[in-house]
Amino acid sequence: VTEDTRWLDATEQQAWRAFLNLQVRLRRRLNRALQRETGLSDPEYGLLVALSEAPEGRLRVYALREDLQWEKSRLTHQITRMTERGLVERQPCPGDPRGTFVALTPAGRAAIEAAAPRHVAHVRRWFIDVLTPAQLASLREVAETVLAGLDDHEDDLDNDR
Amino acid sequence: VTEDTRWLDATEQQAWRAFLNLQVRLRRRLNRALQRETGLSDPEYGLLVALSEAPEGRLRVYALREDLQWEKSRLTHQITRMTERGLVERQPCPGDPRGTFVALTPAGRAAIEAAAPRHVAHVRRWFIDVLTPAQLASLREVAETVLAGLDDHEDDLDNDR
DNA sequence: CAAGATTGAGTAGTCAATCTTC
DNA sequence: GAAGATTGACTACTCAATCTTG
Image (cartoon, rainbow over all chains, first blue to last red; front, side):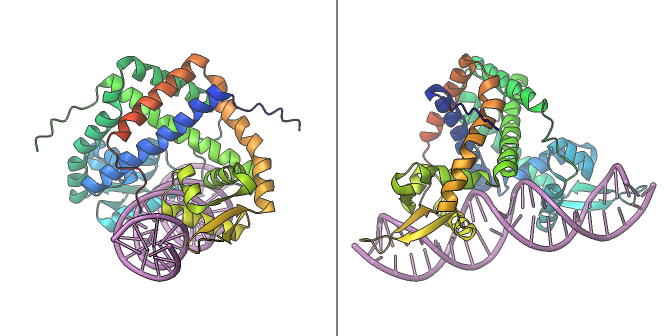
């Protein structure tokens, strides 16, 4: 296979590195702040948000999975840990013995309601508010362009894994 | 504390979500491709690149750490796993008994040389080549702006952890 | 067999505590 | 005590295999 590798030129490198760096640093900053101030990790937060937006604060596992776009087993493991922490509980599904509901516990509800405003404030402070509306629009365009390109290859779409 | 939480408006939400989505999907795509084609994970790749760019393919642990911007213990754990896989080895540091060198093994050298062109090709295909030079420039600007904002708070700078 | 979900083993990453040498 | 580095315990994520019911 003649790979014809074209290396990245200086400009491309800089853009790519800056983007990688941004991802890592911003994620780390947000995670730490969330953890410190609310005791929730990022995945915990995401799962609780999804449940809190659902009617009665509960969803079937597969529905939660579509919402979060996580892998099957990742979601199962996460639910297990969060059940142990008391944030969430499993409920049998009347009508379909194969199925399972995941529901917010009162503690889970309380946790997400306390955490949401904190998290939004962080996203504002470190991301939204330092950018101009034009920059946000441009970033969104870039993101959507790249995402559209990924779809063409259909790989990633969480498989039955 | 009166938090004065301003939620994100529609435009802000869209930009933020698109950015989050981009991160997750692109990272997943690149990781899988790299793993499948070269047998290396993303962190393994990163560490090998750093060593391969150093004279004699070796660095002190602390130098590697500055380069990668990883936490101390993360790096130690990673080196341990990669030593077990035979990609890398620890060498005593003449002159400073506290210190340790991490060096590429021949297997590690071979692995990174095989993997690099593949990885660059992926970054090109899914990221660089779908964007215009103007978009890349704009993205870089956005990334650097946000990163500069993070520095003001100096938190994250991997501490002695 | 397919859909819904779980299990187990392995790799990653974080935090707090520890060890050693300067 | 501080610098250089490691350890252990825990959360998180992936892959492959499994279990159960339709």
